[in-house]
Image 1 (tube, protein in one colour):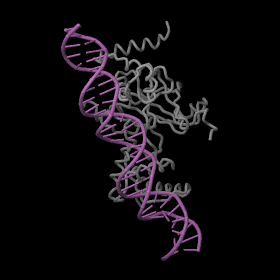
Image 2 (cartoon, chains in turn yellow, green, cyan, purple; image 1 turned 180 degrees about the vertical axis):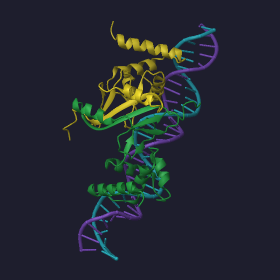
Image 3 (spheres, rainbow over the protein chains, first blue to last red; image 1 turned 30 degrees about the vertical axis):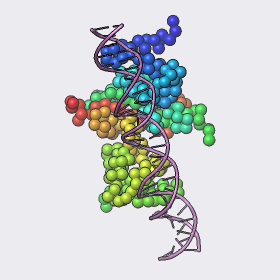
Image 4 (cartoon, rainbow over the protein chains, first blue to last red; image 1 turned 60 degrees about the horizontal axis):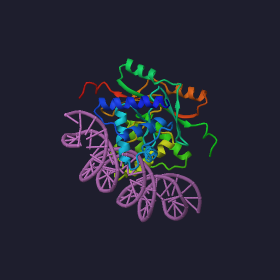
Length: 147
Length: 147
DNA sequence: TTCCTTAATAAGAATTATTCTTATTAAGAT
DNA sequence: ATCTTAATAAGAATAATTCTTATTAAGGAA
């Protein structure tokens, strides 16, 4: 059996939909799959284009609505990108983002933990932490030297 | 003599304008002053309203253009806020942001250093770091308990 | 000071990401 | 198989930001 990881996630998504009284639609599943399978932290329009073949006349608006519902189900999250378009990630393993200011690619960085930040903020009573976003902007190795 | 800190900054701004062949305009100075004096990480429209009395018929577009030029001069930076509107900060002392998801206020947190993150990324050769943004989202003490 | 070049501005149109409106479709409970 | 209503497609609307153009003014030169 292939794609065990993805299938597990899809089952989890279905479960959470049911718990939240949301219907399991082809659009929700396909959009989730597209995010899960991409390493590029895609934006709404990219996702829209990548599912068009599977859901022929899907509307861009549906992608936006679905992204919001997936976000509420904690199946994906919005990457704070300083770019015009919102971008999304389905990978909840603790990591941070390196955003290349030349090519706009977002790379995952797995050596810095947001958990320490969370603990510290919580400990000092600064507020109730929902999530921590550590984002590094810079020039990626591929782009350094260019232009 | 009052506002020594602000005056120093304004002199620095003038200096950087000259170096970059940018003209020192009343609009640039007033917009910078408004950001410097605010602790609220204001957005473009807020700044627009707060300088209207000093620059009566300033255009919102000028605020946007000026913010970009101040950003290029490294006099202000964009706070990555996950909100629709971009928000700005003139405080370059190392700090992070706590964004309250209820009231949308952005609080400065001075106990986490982005420098360590920068060093680590650079050391591992992941890229050339321009800036690090550590952002915590959550509920601030004022808002917890509400609703 | 006055003149000159041109960067910066004001005004408003245009653009673009995102959200809303409405009629239609289909998920899933009965 | 039927029914209720959440989710959808289509396209209009909204709102943040940027662009276009004519005008103004910063600041260097005369």
